[in-house]
Amino acid sequence: MKALSAFLILCFASLGNAKTFVYCSEGSPSTFNPQMASDGTTFNASSRTIYNRLVDFKQGSTEIIPSLATTWKVSGDGLHYTFQLRKGVKFHSNENFTSTREFNANDVLFSFNRMRLKDHPYHKVNGGNYEYFESMEMGSLVKEIKKINDYEIEFILAKPEAPFLANMAMDFASILSEEYSAKLAKEKKEVEIDTHPIGTGPFVLKKYVKDNIIRYEAHPEYFEGKASIDKLVFTITQDPSVRFQKLKTGECNFVAYPAPTDLEKMRADKNITVLEEAGLNVGYIAMNVQKAPLNNPLVRQAIHHALNRSSYIAAIYLNNAEVAKNPIPPTMWSYNDTVKDYEYSPQKAKELLKKTGFEKGLELELWTLPVSRPYNPNGKKMGELIQADLKEVGINLKLISFDWPTYLSKARTGEHQMIQMGWTGDNGDPDNFLSVLLGCGSIEGGSNYARWCDKEFVSHIDQAKRITVQSQRAIHYLKAQEIFKKSAPWVTLAHAKVYRAMSKNVVGYKISPFGADTFYGVDLK
Image 1 (tube, rainbow, N blue to C red):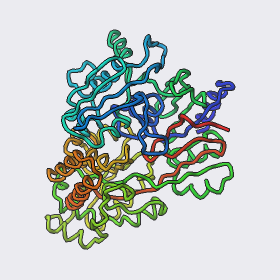
Image 2: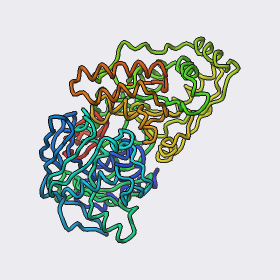
Image 3: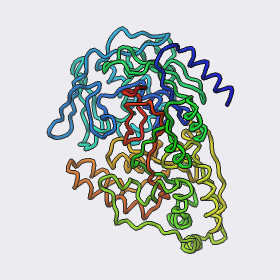
Image 4: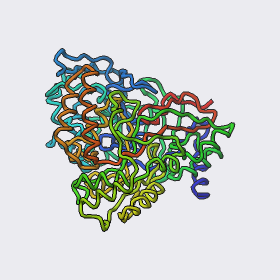
């Protein structure tokens, strides 16, 4: 720790009089291309710093606002979305690339066609896994993308999709440089498009050392105006207590995911500001239904009954959360409050295990979350509590973990039996939870970690997408939650409050309902 601190001090001393903002982040990004990720750690380091999308969410809200598109119109049948693109937008430069033109429709075509066209020359670069795009079945939804001219582009859909515009503001819809891709292809360096990124966003990536540091500089020609801070530094610090110490000593201006155990001390410190908000999130254990004995719903129900989830709320979250019974949070429209949850009952768990022939017990594995998240601040401790509860009903649980990028890559291919996961909403729509996390198409996409496919459930989700009237959409989502609960592909754990902590001289930061940490618009007094 002393060596790292000394290293950081030397780095910051070299920055001269530049205004530097230091963010203590919780982990390393899995990539610098948000098209190929689904985790907030990666999005904070990429889409929210380096890139823009056609539309965006107003800071701190779910309101859709212009970004790389200035205006848009939707046809009466809901199948045609036409975007007017912003002129004068400059791309970043790095040591190997300087753009000769401004952003235009070719960049939109490249960015989306890379994900949707399997014969696209960049589709398979760096693995070709576009988790969101595939999980949301965007490939079958987007029938065609037509360039009208350099500053007008049309998306033609195969069917109406109520959340389409909100989806276009999500991180996966970030726009890359087509000109940069052509240069890399010519040099046979295609892989660098995702490791040495070029975007239009407020910050330019300058240096990355895995599990250590990420350094950015403000994009001097950013179309919304240069950022107030000149340098942005992510110091990657997995332990939340160490992040707190760095905040106290001034090594960080801002910390991600403060530990519940540190909140009281943070609030008592006159030099620290703590922000709090109800979280649009859910923490859960996904049970891989493609692996025996978890392919039996009675076994999954038994596990649900065996876990004393209210005790986890006290021990892990220090009561800064509530027990979850549905896959969407109670603050979201269409939440089904009439669903009956699985009560904590070791006796019922034993009875169900006896019915399935496991009265003498069984062996299972649980992967524990290696990074702190609002929906699970301490994966290891959570795993130990779950392990103890399951032992009481005759289930011996082996706990396993990996570093965060490995954890995600292995989980996407279904190597686990049971896994701790969670989700923070991306666009304020129930579809973003129910379809992305539990749809049949999400199995191949990699975000359906239970690998659960229920045709009746999917039928309701698909019908809800085709309707624009919210009250009518809600009818289908209410039913979908009932089907989910009966089948029990997850143990629903918690909906947690969201906290952020920062030094008193930080101004302009707003908590995002989507759990994003965005530093454009933030300043130091």
